[in-house]
Image (cartoon, rainbow, N blue to C red):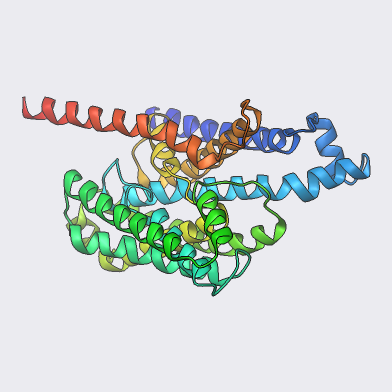
Length: 340
C-alpha cells in the first residue's frame, strides 16, 4: 500500500512538473517588450497571427526558450547524477568548478582568436575543460572523500579556473572581445538564435543520454561501492561515464549561455521530499525542475524593472548562494545530532 502511494505521488509530481515546464515555456515566449497572451503565442507558433508576431515568437524568443529548457534540464540532471555518484547531497557541477572550467576553455579559444562565439570549437574547448575539472576533482579528493574535502577541492578548481579566465581577459588583444566575454561570463540567454541552439543541443542531448543510461548503476551505488560491485557495477567505468556526461552537457551549455550556477544544486533537493532518495528515480524530476527554474529565472530577468539587462546567471547565484548556506547549516545540524 505504501509503495503504491509513493509511486502515485511520483507520477503526479512528474506530471505536474511537465505541466509547469510547458506553462513557463509559453510564458517565456510571451514575455518581453511586446507582451503576448498564451493564445497569441500558440497561434504564432502554428503560423497564424501577424508577420511581426511570428518573427518575435519563432525567431527571437523560441531559441531562447529552447535553450533555457535544455540548459536548465542538463544542469538539474548533472547535479542529481553527481550527487548519486558521490552519495553527497552538496555535489553539483558549479561547486566542482565544471562551469567555471568550461567557461575558461571557451574564453581561451575566443581570446586567442581561434574561433568566434558561433564556432563548434567553442563547445569542444568548454567540454574538454569541464571534463578535466571533474576528473581532477575526483583524482585529488579520492573515492571516499568527505564533504569538507570535496568542497575545498571544488573551491580550489573554481578559483583556479576563475583566475585563468581573468588572465585570458587581461591578455586578450581585442578590448571589444574582452568586454563581450565579460558580459557573456555572467550567464545570459539574450540574443540567442537557432545557431546557438544547434551549437549546444547535440552536446546537451549526448550528455543527458550518457547520464540517463547509468540509472540502474546509481541505484546500486547507493548501497555502497562494494555492494554495487557485487551486483556487477564497474565503479571506475561509472565514474568516467558520469564525468563524460557532465562535461558534455555542461560544456555545451556554457558555450552558448555562459556560467549559470546553482541550478544543479537546487533542483535535486527540491525533488527529494516528493520523489524520495532513490538516485535513479530522481534524475528525470531533477531535469524537469532545472528546466522550470531556468525558464522562471529567464522570465524574471525580463520583467524585473532595471536600467540595464539583468543577467540570468546573476539571478540564479543570488538565489543559489543562500540556499547553499542553508544546506550547509542543515548538514552541520545533522552531524551534530549524530555526534550527540
